[in-house]
Image 1 (cartoon, rainbow, N blue to C red):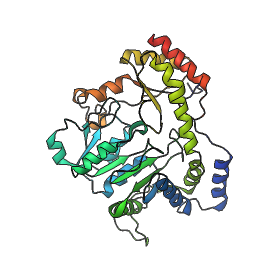
Image 2 (cartoon, one colour):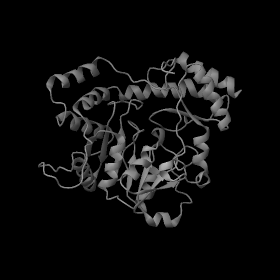
Image 3 (cartoon, rainbow, N blue to C red):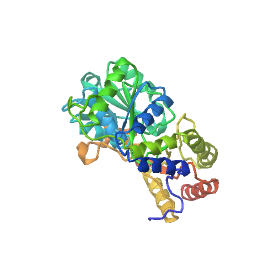
Image 4 (cartoon, rainbow, N blue to C red):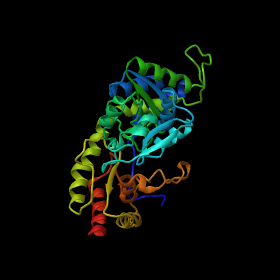
Length: 355
């Protein structure tokens, strides 16, 4: 359907965003201006980070962060088997090999029972703050083992402080705030500054501060238009997260728990999406079909990554919890502008199917 009665996500955009973008267009400074650096600095400040660099997407931010810590062809990088595929695609883009790790019932990377040889061979790990949950426990354990960590915080705006060697935030339109497309790489300390400086060079075709080529690079710059939109959106972040919290905890959760649907409302989140899990794939698919027929959009959060063709169609039995979550999970409509009556209608249909 092209016109959803209740869409999965919707951003709040107003006069402030319009004027910010128009100001850039009228200035003629569309790229390599001050706004991208200012936006990155503001994002870093919001999350307690010292160093930052704006990039054209969260996915490219992950790739460049991995390259900046020395990851390349043939290296093994740990990655959860249940996450958005960008977390693993960024590893492939460097020439490295994702080594998939199972997750717990909340979708967070599980390090218990991880094979000792993997810990010896792993050159790095991509740890995901899934659905806005903090992965600090996983990050700190891996760092104690001497494994460098790229923290995929693309779903955790406003909810985490970067604990990995380097972290990446994303600003796609389904996020807490948006730049349309864009990302920010953040880090702390002396090593963090070195990592961010490498990312800054690589995002601009490998150019150093003086403009000379110092190594490999690509075009991953954030435009001034995108940065201006992000700067205007930053003032909305706290309200966006609060409104999402109200929809999740006060509206959705009491209705859905009565019919046995599992949610994450008991966990501290920055509320990227509203994921739920059903008793089986059959029930999940029936709910999705019924909602679709009513003009209500849902999302597949997330498909099981290891069986995707680029990862060699690996056996699902290697990661049973990740497989179970992928088969039974669904994201329901969720954004700052959603109305209580819309949530009630979604819940009514879910109860009608689940019983």
